[in-house]
Length: 533
Image (cartoon, rainbow, N blue to C red; front, side, top):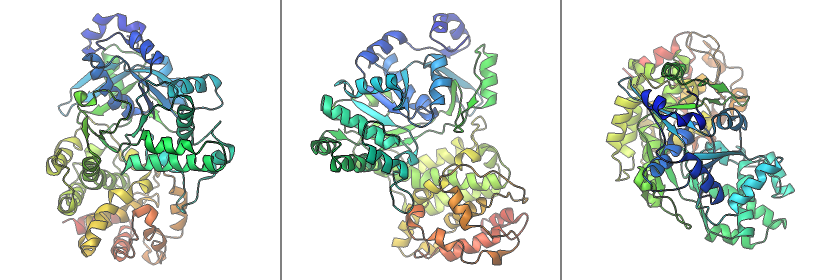
């Protein structure tokens, strides 16, 4: 069996392999969607395919919707060419259960995949048709937090954004410029309201999206590329709902590929694109999933609540997101990631057999996080963190790697640790923290690109990697005196940490932990044992 539309005709073979198929006419849904699009999504990666795509599949299977999603990518066009097109936009979704079993389903809810490439006239014609359609209710995003950033750490506009502003909306290069351009086209063509929904794993994601799009739009208005009424349209007719998303979707695992091959499904090999995206025709992911969205859709929406999505008010979304991102999952993930890389682990589940690492995340979550967590009311923080620590992270069939989680850490620490730091600082109790400063010190130690045996390791990609490593130059293992004041310029950077950790009174503790972490071979393990006994 091959993953394409023609192969779906052989229903018996798929069913014999235990793989569920779409319970609707995939081609008819695709045709209807292209004629009258309802939902466009930017960010065609794994969490979109395995989670967002499955939400719409449930609605289609139940007859609660008659159209699918059009996917688009602004960053890695190889995803479209090497994964979507060869498989007729189908995805094989594999849920990894803790008992070792898997549940497989072919998703047909994504009906087309586009490249946001302004040099491609055919693709741009499709985008203009979609954004000019009154039927379009929402455009959503999973482009990672850095996809919304239009300024560098100094607060200056990035060169690519400056270029987009100077050149106008005809051929934008940055993702936010592209979205601003398409919304301008919608304003000029039909003026119909729309919801722009960030589903990325970052705090106040809707606010970040709105801020970046509006900043670019304002600059275009100022330069005469767009009428001032466009800004009124963005303010009054385009909503930017906030959301919280949670589902661990690791890189495609070889073991899952082999399992699918054993079921008779061919052509499942993963690819690594030139932009270092790991992707395959299948998505492997854990079963638990959460999506909470502010219910603000000025042009209507699919009945998402019928597919397991929480629709609520902004305050509840914010509380749920704070609960997860600042306390119950993401801080634990980051701490495991940086220490796991230094201690030689390649799987998160294996780290959960390590006494020191388990004590680290329990202290981080239960002892330091839960006392200041915000309870959203719709999900219990204690139950959530219990599920994370006892079921999700230890799942031996979840092939998630600390090296993947460590990606873009500089873009995450301000939220994952910074909010709890702010809470303790406000109470005058920041000096009571141990796990958070230990995690931050561990990240800085990780940036030295040496493991605990002092062997070279590859530091995961990060937009500030080169800048931060430059600041750490000259620091030598076994020579704590070489640290000097090198950490202070990093620790006082509010853009990175969300607050000035020097003013917060945590710098001395972090510097002390860091000095112990670099005191020699085996110092990482020894430091964890010392403070987590």
